[in-house]
Length: 207
Image (cartoon, rainbow, N blue to C red; front, side):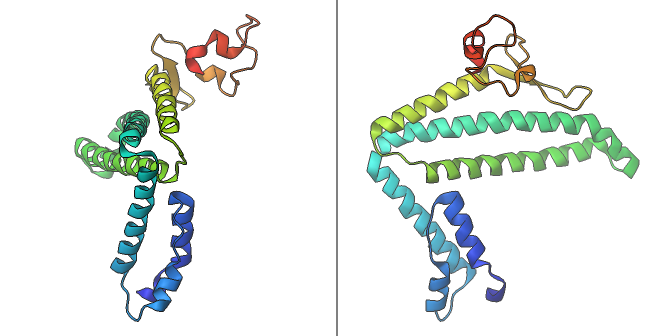
């Protein structure tokens, strides 16, 4: 129902998440009859125009590699979170038996729901980044893609294990180096190992 529409909230969300400035209230007031599908079409059309203007500015050939890097990094990050969530689910799924449910079937159902959430998270994050990124030249696109690629390489060097007795997730590098004990240490802070060097020098692969 039109009386239940939160146009102000929608405009705020579009402005904050996608940087789309659309006066939907004026559009509704100027129309004698409008449906929620009309509002959706207006938003999608404005989003396509906003994104096309970004492509025209830097060129599709420069922007596509950046899109690829954003997508790959988002999938990599959220996939690791998904595996951690599945591990939590697996550890407690036997409790479903107390509710007269089949743990194996419940695991399949809940794991499928988690996978759906994974896809939604990737879609939302990639869309938000591509819609809000401010790039003014092809060189900046390449620099941004390179920075994302380097960050993805650092993520690839890490592995996630099952939670410890405190419930905290353990994060280590591929060679078994535990980085959780260095949480909160800046790259230019002294390394707690006692070497006297900056943290980024001792453990540059983590910076």
